[in-house]
Structure formats: C-alpha cells, structure tokens
Length: 101
Image (cartoon, rainbow, N blue to C red; front, side, top):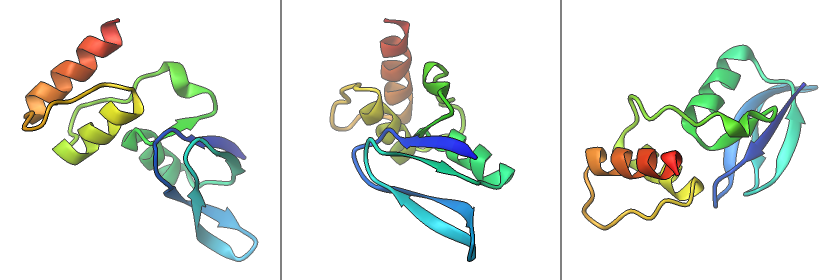
C-alpha cells in the first residue's frame, strides 16, 4: 500500500488495484489515501506534480519535460504566482526561484 496525497486545488485521479480490478480512484484536494498502485502508475503520479507520495513532500517535482499547463499546476500547488502571458521559461524560472527561497 502506498499513501498518496492530492496537493492540488482540484480533484485528481489515479489508477489503483481494487477487489474489482484496476480502477480509477478520485482523490479530493488535500485528501490522502492508502492505495495498492501498480509501479508504472505510481511513477506517473510522482511525475505529475499533483501528489505527495509516502512523505516525498520534501522532494520537488521535476520541471523537465512539462508543458505550460502542467507547469501552471505545479506553480499553483507550490504557491507561486504567475503573471498572465508568462512563457514556459518564465514559469520554470519563477518556480525555481521560489524553491530557492
């Protein structure tokens, strides 16, 4: 079982093993659940920036390979304000600056 927490402001779903087979499990904002997740789904969940997995909250989500929408979600989850019209590079720079403190 893996403890997974939704760190975003909206509901998010993950695939997990249930008694009925592989099922989509919705996790509400700020909620956490203990789930039996296939390794590939667990890695996918880690990569989205939407979840904290088993206390990995100290480990920031990689920004590499993320599109603008994904970066905006990461920025929102980390409390980074992004100006309208910001480019992908601007968003990455703002998140990295925020992480440096």
